[in-house]
Image (cartoon, rainbow, N blue to C red; front, side):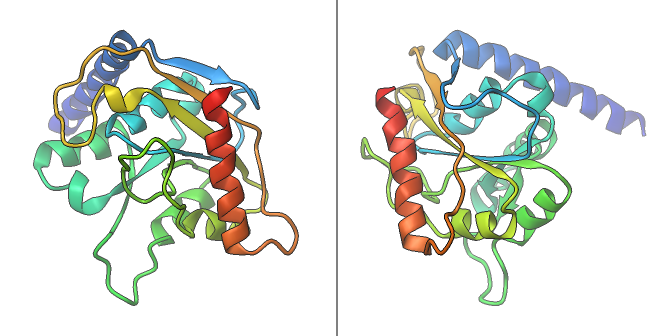
Length: 211
């Protein structure tokens, strides 16, 4: 019992340390351009070029929204070592998804369960980090979640410059001014098919790059 309490406190302290670190390294500017930071159930979806993306959006949210907003992370990578597993589960309370799942396994099941309990999500619809300036094609998960939870706001976000803080393949961050711009919430339009919606969602993220 005492060990559990101590670990909980350590997790809280580490979260404050990471918040301070990301703000020192990046300036961590949150730009609520298309919507205010309200306590609504939302899916924040963004471009993905760095491991720091998760922390950037998490740090950009007000404290009262951070508690119920959970990032989606690849289980095989983020549980590879005990420290990564502890960091993502105890500090960030992420939802793990399996990239090497069995054919009968529904990859959205843990996300649906979390949203059914009222949690918001931070989702990177590309599925993996990219090297290009523009996002890769989005995967269908965002569309399927939007259909299942039509009352939930889908908020596009553009993470600017963070790939220069910790690009793919690097482990030591460098100080660079970064920002997260949140756009106008969107929904699946009546009769809209998956490819059309995903392309519209991708363009909504990309349009925030120049705001």
